[in-house]
Length: 249
Image (cartoon, rainbow, N blue to C red; front, side, top):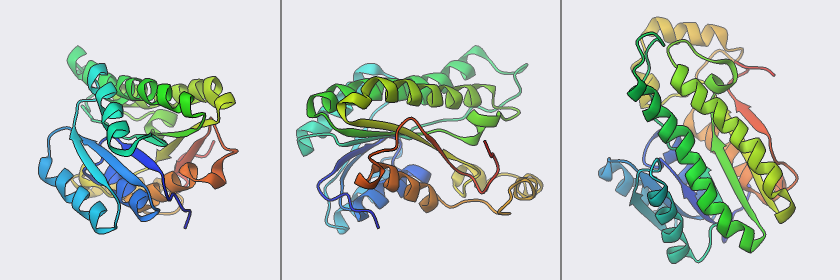
């Protein structure tokens, strides 16, 4: 396993699903972790308890990353608690799925504000500190929906595609200062969001996926650990697909 001893990390949307798996994997690798969450305090507290059980420092901070002031406060809290920010994982995201003809401006804005603007606000705040340190890792959790599009997800697909552009542009801006910026693009992963999908849709997804199954949150977390590690110091501006072969580019 790649070691992240001495790292301090921020994981947005770290209370459940993929974010939870990433936060716990980071703690397993030796990092102290601050997670943000929107409203599920019990789930966030449970993650922090698991991080503590692994012998690492954990902090849960309720924050709306779509608010630039809140994003700046998250980074400030991590610096207060850990003294630095080595790693930012932009994972927080929401869905408001519907066909584009039925999609309201509010449904569009909500998803763009949280999934894309939130990543921008968090990145801006974290990069300021990483530039001073002349090192850092930023990892954006995008999606196959941002690579190939998905019917009923014009807002989500647009936000996730925007994250890929954000990843590449930021990577070019900060590479000279020892900061890498990459993205992980999950396919269909077994989480609360996918658990309620009708069996017919699940079967259809599996049929389209060369590996013939949904992924697991820990498989996304493993990709994040690699990109965060010293071994990935020559990797930047890349999108690592963890999707069972669903999207091959």
